[in-house]
Length: 125
Image (cartoon, rainbow, N blue to C red; front, side, top):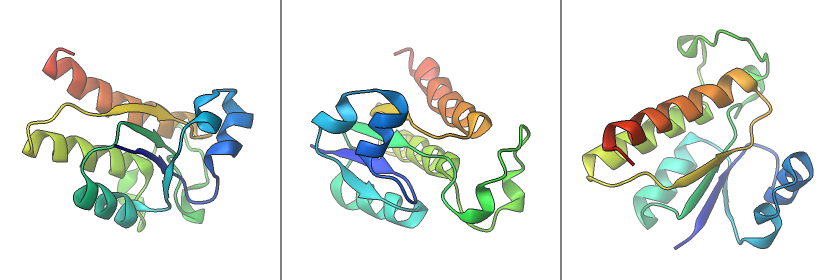
């Protein structure tokens, strides 16, 4: 199995300095930079053991609005990746992987957590 790190710029060690979570240093990570790479990697390799999400995956995402209108974005965000992941789990009757959110966008991070936790509540896990 593997650990998947989604971020357009940062690497896992940078996230350690921001979060002080040692696993960003201790674990081996596969890094993907955008939605297409995220989908492609999971489709080819199956679910990761652990997935760490950034929300803002393009310069146009860096506005940190409290109310995010996803229809305004041409490029997909970490939220879109989380939504795709949940759809993938539903389609394949899988539990979602363990996850972290290392995004500096609080509203976007909340949206990622919300969609994953909602699915986990549905599964009663």
